[in-house]
Figure 1 (tube, rainbow, N blue to C red):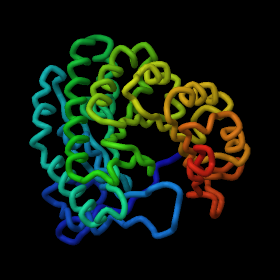
Figure 2 (figure 1 turned 120 degrees about the vertical axis):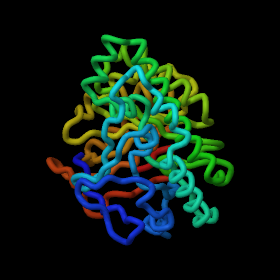
Figure 3 (figure 1 turned 135 degrees about the vertical axis):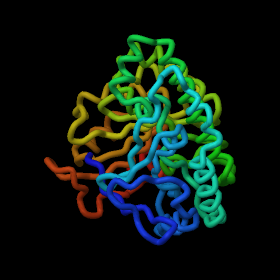
Figure 4 (figure 1 turned 180 degrees about the vertical axis):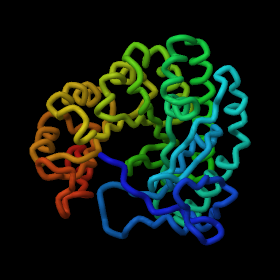
Length: 333
């Protein structure tokens, strides 16, 4: 799906971001940002919607990447000229972006007063931080030409991810003894990681370089979940199903550029057999029927939107329908 245009970010002086403008915590007001985040609606659903800070490319910003507003989106620009000097990444704990993330989360949770959860923001994973910091091409060359340096880079980026995730987690109370991710509750602490730039790797390279990062992240939380895309799932699936500490997998269906559902079903079944599975994205009614007929309801949540054949637009009223796992054998859509 193409990126959706976002509303300009409100600035502390009352203006809004302009094309090409740099973003930094100094030009932002945390209270304005809290006010700009709406509260969940009062309509009863079978999932637990929460609120989260906007996507500011948090982990990339905390790693030291310049953040700019361009084409109605927030983007991170490279920050590492020398792969052998990771000192910039090693000061992530002092980043003003980290302070902003913690304060924004704390104020959102305070406003909620326990009525709904403070959900995790979009925190991109180690390989995504590395790609943002050095650029995709340099990342690929380093992986092949300097594998030890590449491992050190990923380890430093994992540190950045962990300090970001732990800052968010510590800034809000548990919600009824747990946390929510993709609007699904789990006991204890949760986090969502991802590896979108795994598209640059092979299954062997994923296991060799990224699995150790996943293991460190999963060890730090009670219920970690990894976000994936249907277009790269074949690269990751064998590695992540062998990771016991990973408690769930979310798959975004890439339409129209990803594999067909028929081609994807064996991988979804592989996950469905051993991990709780959340599937999101646009599907036709026929594809939804196929998912319901082909996957076990145990640990399955379908948060999908119906689309008409040949279009990527949700049918009116079709999106946002959810069936509770308790009443529908674990299926939600």
